[in-house]
Image 1 (cartoon, helix red, strand yellow):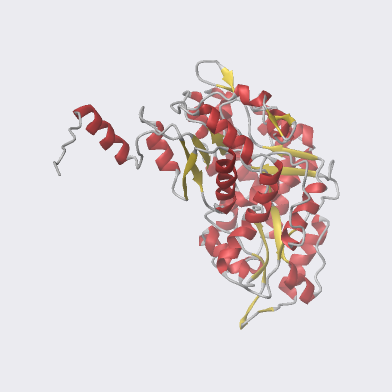
Image 2 (tube, one colour):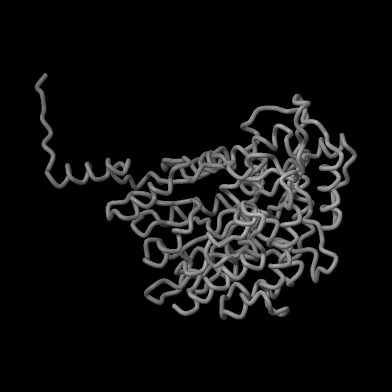
Amino acid sequence: MKKSTIYLSLPFVLLSTALASCGQKQDDLTQLNVVVYSAGWGDEWIKDVVTKWEEKNLGYKVDLTAKYEVNNLISKRLASSKNTDDLYISTSSSWKTYAATNKFMALDDLMEEEVDGVKFIDKVSSEYRSDLYFKAANGEKHVYRLPWTNGIGGIYYNAKMFETNGWEVPSTTDELLNLVKNIVSNPVAVEGDETTAVKPFVFSGTNTDYFDYGIFNWWMQLAGYDAVKKFYNYDGLENFDFNNPSSPYHALKEVVSYWRELFASKDNYVSGSLSFSKDQAQNSFFNGRAAMMFNGDWLYNETLNLGSNSNFEVKLMKTPKFSNAKEENVGYVIGSDQYIAVPATSKKKELAKSFIKEMVSNWSLSNFTNKSHGFLAYNNSDTSSIDKTNTYVASCLETRSSITNKLTDYSSSRKYLDEEIKNAWVESGNRPFLGLLQNESKTVESCFQTIYEAAKLAFKS
């Protein structure tokens, strides 16, 4: 047989080399390249979406990259003009920069298309719907980023431990504080370790932002939903004036002062919490060393990887109510740093849109809850296929159904979008929790003064 030789041009070789350096292949118009951040939610849910989508789109296939370390990968590929990716689903505040610099494709037309008989924009959860349109650096306002999940976090508790010890799930902040005192005053040995007493809480010192998920619920209780929603316009320094009773930050300071009471003593939390990673903290909770922890609703799915423990049954409690609360049925939604986006270099916008529509359809929303035990940021008009026999999911559904006003800390303010201000704390490093835990002489007042000074600088710029 005559041997044939294929000669490749230099541009082709250079292109192939460049794509290989980013872990990419040449573009195939019959293949949709999807990149997803795989962490707490896992990736079983999206594999199901891929299967369903491929069944409906014969002749087309999905190349799925699902891994924990995708953000660096996305950054490198967006910097390349030869990027062959078609869809990103991830978590990082970097989405704001990508959108502002037109690295993402506008999806305005998708808003008018239908899913499950309703317009796409009406499928989006209400707390995100009014902020879908993003103003890029060139002044154009488009839908560059879609939300991903709609997480309701707060205080999670070991229901088995509560039942065994006759502890009532607290419905008020006073009851919660009394429960903490009761657990400390009447020690219960950790199962399998008679020398160690169960602590009220465990937390991750490297992830103290997890406290936000309960703190912000309480903040809305005291300040009111409308006041906190208006706060996220970031329209003036006066909102950070914690000494002014009419300022939203006055209420936030009151909440943090209460939080400090919960963690006033080292007896109130597991030794080592200050240096724990989130995984170490969750492991400690799972193994019965603490009764409660502040976390997000990916917690259950992550504990599934820890094995089995007949003495552990995690549930989400409705955030206890302050006696002077203006509102009770309010909830902070986790997910302002998450995004679903189509890179501007994609040649398969219509395929990407059809995949997104499949992902937010009723069956997929229920499937996400069943497989990941969380909730996507889209309205599900048919929840009949959600497995409500799962006690964790049932507790989440009960808590979520009690919330009439949900709020995300996403803002369309340029102060927020330009990263001068990050959520309520101006800069994430100014969160008061770690400083108060590490230094007993530090005051809540001094922490809020630090935040106020940082806000001054942000509003001067």
